[in-house]
Length: 175
Image (cartoon, rainbow, N blue to C red):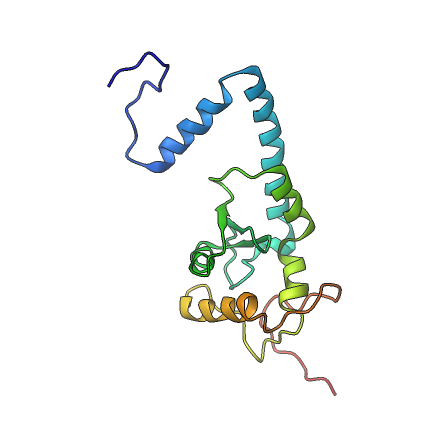
């Protein structure tokens, strides 16, 4: 139906991504307050991208993938597409870095935590010989790893010690 409210001149897109972009663009142009809100949002997005690019956050928290396009909110970690889907299976809420809006509080939590703090807590007692970091193309291994790591808390200890090695590289046994 037709309506008197201003709407995008192009017809609704078949893709949800296009509709999302229209929604975000429209919301920012409604009022001066929305423009100020847009400036704050841009600042939050900039900080989120900086946190995402930190060395400890460049690799997925749960596999060997170098992609980290999602955030698992419960643990404040960056993960790849495959791992984000597996986290959803465990009812762990996650958001796309590129397609979701993040609050200032969410970004501040990521700034304090991230994959480095996760490694010092959820992997504090982990060893590569016991359970190597799964390959990004092994969803069954990733699923088991995520279950052991976050659900069973197999390697968990309070934060404070150094992070375990990032790659499953062979290590010398302690003498």
